[in-house]
Amino acid sequence: MRRTISLIIAAALVFIAAACATPDDKITGASRKAVVDDFMGLVTATSNGEAMPAFKGLALLHNDLFDTETESWANLEFNEGQYVLIEENTSLQISELTDVTKRVEITLTGGKLWVYISNRLSDDESFEIKTPTCALSVRGTVFSVSCDKDGGGRIVVYEGVVNVQAGDESIDLSRGAMEIIAENGELVEIHTAALDFEDIAPFYIKGIAGPGGIFAVLREKLPRLTWDNDNPPIDDATNTEPGGNQDGAMTGGGGNSSEHGEKTETDETDPTTTEPPETPDPATTPQPEASDPTTTPQPEASDPTTTPPPETPDPATTPQPETTAPPDTTPPPSRAPTITFGGGPYSVAAGSSVDVSCTVTSYEQVNYNTRIQDAAGASARGFDLSLIGNAGTITHATIYVDSGVPSATYYVTVTAMNSEGSSSATFALRVVTAVVDPPVISVLRNQSFIVQQGSSLQVRYTITGTEPINVTVDAGYIDGRPGSEFFIVDTSACTITASSWLPAGIYTVGLLAMNSAGSDTDRFTIEVTAALAPPAIFVIRNQNFTVMQGGNCRIQYTLIGDEPIYVTLYAMDVSGAPVSDFFSVDTNSNTVSSSNRLDPGVYTVTLTATNSAGTSNDSFTLVVESVRPNAGP
Image (cartoon, rainbow, N blue to C red; front, side, top):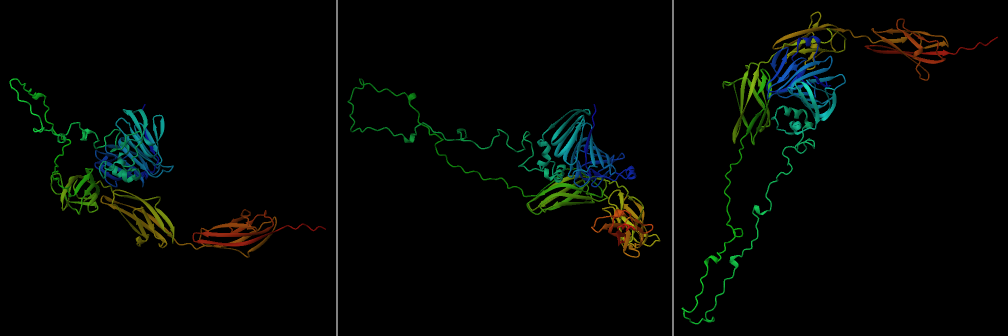
C-alpha cells in the first residue's frame, strides 16, 4: 500500500526564500515568498518550466522547483528566525505558499533538508513537507529530514518535538532519530534510534565541510547546538567522540621490564677482585732430594681441554664511553602566509556579488595580489574582490561582478605575501546572466481615500520584480498644481505617507516603479476634507426641572457643530447609582425624556456631544416629587 508522508511544520515558515512569481500569483494576490538567503555552488530555480541559476535575494513562490547539485547548498528564509537549509543533490517543490491560507507545503523528492523554527507557530499557520512515505508536523523546533530514491530516509530531531506519521502510525519524536525503510516508494519499516556521532558532527566538528559551507551556516544559525570538544552530545549507548581513548588502548612509554634495558644482577666473580695464588719462599721451602730421573716418576702433563678459559667482563656492568648527539639540522617552520579557499565552484549573477569561504593566516602584515582569468587564460575585467577580516587573519571574501561581464567560468587566483614568502590559492567562479523581471506595482485595497484636514494618511502598495527597483511618487491637485512635497515613499515598508499639512482638496497620486527590465505605474486619489468645528451642546431655559411621581418630563437641548455629532446621556441619583435606563435621547428633535417609573428623588443628567473635532457636555437636575394623598372632606 502506498503511503504519503506529509511533513506538517506549523510555522509561518517565512523560510525558503526566492521570487519566481507567476501571473496567477499576481492575480490572486499571493505575496508570501521564500527568499534565497545564501547559497554555494550550482543551485537552480525553475518557474513555469523555465530554469534559472539561483542568486541571493531570489524569491520563490508556490509551484516553483528548487535543486542543488553536487558540492552545492542553499539557505532559504521565510521569516526572521525560520530557515530551511538544503544540502547537495537535493530536489524539492514549493507546492503551496500563500498569505491567504498561511500554509506552506514543500514536496521533498530526494536529498536532505535542515529545518530551524526558532519561534512557535501561531494556530492559523502551518508548514508541510511531503515525501513518498511519511509525515512530520511541528510548532517550533530544529530537525533534519532526508529522502532516498526508494522514499525512505532518516529524521533527526535536535530540539523540540516532531510528530511523525508513517502509514497508520503516529509517533512524537524528541531529541532522537527515526529510520524510514522503504522499497520502490512503499513503506516497509520504521524504527527509532538515539543520536549518533554522524548526526551531531556538523555542530561538533568545526572544520567539517570547510569554513563557509552549509555546516558553517548551521553553526551560525544554531549557536546553542554547537558543542565543544569537552561536552559532545552523544548518548551513552553510541560511539565515543573522535580522539577519545578506546578500551584497551595503549598509553605510550615503556615499562620497568628488563626488555626495556633494566639492569640485572649476575653471579659471576669479578676477575678484578680475585686474589692471586701465594708463591712459596725457596729459602724456607725444603728441596726435594736428587733422584735418578730414570727412577723418579715424572709429573703428569695437564689436559688443556679441562683448563677454564679467562673470564670476559660483563658489558652491562662495564661503564660505556659517553656519546654526543648530532646537531639538529631540521629547518625552522616556515612563517610564510597560507591562503585557502573552501567550497566551490561558486556561481554568481552578473551585476551582483557572492561570498567565498577563504582563510588566510600569517605572523605579520600581508599583501595580496589578485589575478582573474577566463578558461583560455586571458585576463578578465569587471571583478572586485574584497578580503574580510584582520590584516593577518582573513575569514571570507566577497567578489562583485559587473553587470557587463559575459557568462562564463572564470578562475580567481589570490597570492598572499609577507617578508617570509608567499602562497597562492585559486577558485572557480561561474558567472551567469541575471534574469531580470520587470516591476509590477499596485495599491492595496482601493483607489480612493478620504482624510480630514490635519490628519496624516498611510497607503500600502505591493511590488514584485527583480531588485533593485526604484519607486518614485508624482502627486498634485486635481487642477494640476504640484503637491509631491506632501508625500513620502518608504520602499522598505512599501508605504506612501500623506502629510497632515495637506490643504483641503482632491489629490491624484501616481507611483512609478523602474528597474533595468522596464517600469510600471499605479494611481490613487486622496480627498482632504476641511477640518470640522467642535460641537457645543446646552440645555434650553434652565438647569433644574421638577415632575410629580408617575409623570414624565421632556427637556429640550440645543446642539451646534459639524456633523456627524454623536449625543450620549448619563444619569445618576444622589447616591451616585446610575439610572440612565430611565432616560432617552431623541437626536432628531433634540430632546431628553424621563420615564414615569422614576421613584421620588433628585437626579443629575449629563449630555455629551462628540465629533472628530472634540466634545462638549451640559447637565441638568430633575426632581421627582411624591404624590400627596387627598386630605378628605
